[in-house]
Amino acid sequence: MPERKPRADAVRNREAVLAAADRLFASCDRPEQVTMADIAVAAGVGKATLFRGFTDRTGLIRALYEARLEPIRQAITDGPRPLGPDTPPMERALALLDAVLCFKLDHRHLSLALEAAGTDSPYSAEHYDWWHGTLRRVLERLPGFDGGDFAAHALLAAVRADLVDHLVDREHMPRERLRADLAAFVTRVLTTAPSP
Image 1 (cartoon, rainbow, N blue to C red):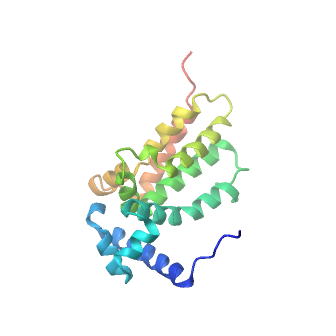
Image 2: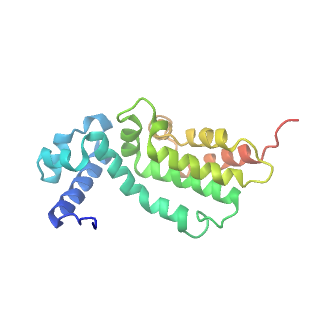
Image 3: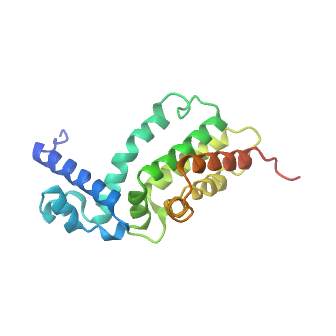
């Protein structure tokens, strides 16, 4: 049996909800301030529509995060240099981590909300598994580099949303300095020869 297409009003409602949630998370001081009731009012839909479409607040945050992340995933999976699969591994690792950092900078409150939503560990989130697996496979292509699994975890820790938020809000680090510092750090980690 063919998969049923969602009704036009359901698609419109979903887009309105995601856009409203995006605006609210972007303008809040702390992600936990944004409630399902706030999102329903801002989107012009009933709370029942939210729960029917997303199950709960965590489901809504995940859906919004995935929607914003999809263009980056496409660029990494199918795109041209520097993110695409034909890029040399060192260049690709740098570009991939820069893309994660820029995404977290552009969607800081949403990223914070997702890392804090529904679990005590952001490492159990589906999107984290995807980032980790993608980066690990890139690191495994680096000549003479061992320990790609742990290194992928450690490098992704450098772009956690709570760290990015701390560096921007408390340390007042500008975007370009953060990007340059990350690139320098990743280069050191990936080019330092292991001790005999």
